[in-house]
Amino acid sequence: MILKERTKSITHRVLESLNFRMNLPVEEQLKYENQVKGWAGEKQFDFYMSQFHQSGLVLNDLVLNYRDTVFQIDSLFIVNDSIYLYEVKNYTGSYFYKEDSFFTESGYQILNPLRQIDRSVTYLQNVLLRLGYRFPIHPMVVFINPEFTLYSILPNKHFLFSSQVPKHLSALSNQNFLIKQEQLDLAHKLKELHNEDYRPDNLPIYQLGQLKKGILCPICFSLSHTDTRQNYLCTACKHKEIITTAIERSIKEFKLLFPDNLMTTSQIYEWCGKNYSKERIRIILKKNYQSHLSRHMTYYSEKSPSKVPLFDKIP
Ligand SMILES: [Zn+2]
Image (cartoon, rainbow, N blue to C red; front, side):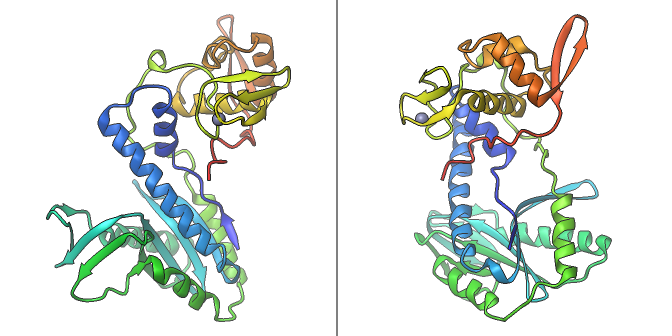
């Protein structure tokens, strides 16, 4: 049973939006490309998991806190009285593994993903203890890309290569395991602890004035569109969307990029490329957000989260 679907991280969504609204510096551009590659790998892992999740409980993309530390888990699978933690790596090319270190073909050392997952195991164990649970945790680093080769003298039971993933998941799900109430309770508690609004402190620096305005297509990210009275129609990929939904989506994107700005009708009018009347925007803001009056200015803040997904339609 999938209890928490995967959503793109805040870093991914911020970089995605900026990438189509400004010229990203090379370093940020590389970070964005890594996010896209990582996301594709995780979706591939989800595809395998979708065939085997019935016998356990799956939580994807969990961001948890232990004391002052934030840690992230790509996939957590509670099955057969155990917890499996998966760190998914979409590496391509040849790597060498020796003396607990990873090296590229040209000899550069990269971070060992096992250390990353060991850290998550330690913190998760403490979180479980605090909640009153004791389950064995099995960490697994999944190299999801078939174009990845690891040269290593000894096999490592914590490494899972793309061709082994279906067999591994199938073995876990073939144990006629019934989901117990205790496990369901734990999974719900972990889901509640998920820190949805976590903003890492290494996000790029940008200002509203630098960004191209207008509504991005959620499929191809083009800013060019033609509209009928009710519908937004992307000129590039022909994606069609109700204008109200497109504006709501764009407001969410604005809030993602500028969480501290006081959101006003004029600001959103400009953000949406001045294509829609202030009256239309005011109605949408009033419907979805709490209005406040401050020094003759009305601004809007979160009421209840809007149901419109932000770019999550992308395969
Ligand atoms: Zn499009």
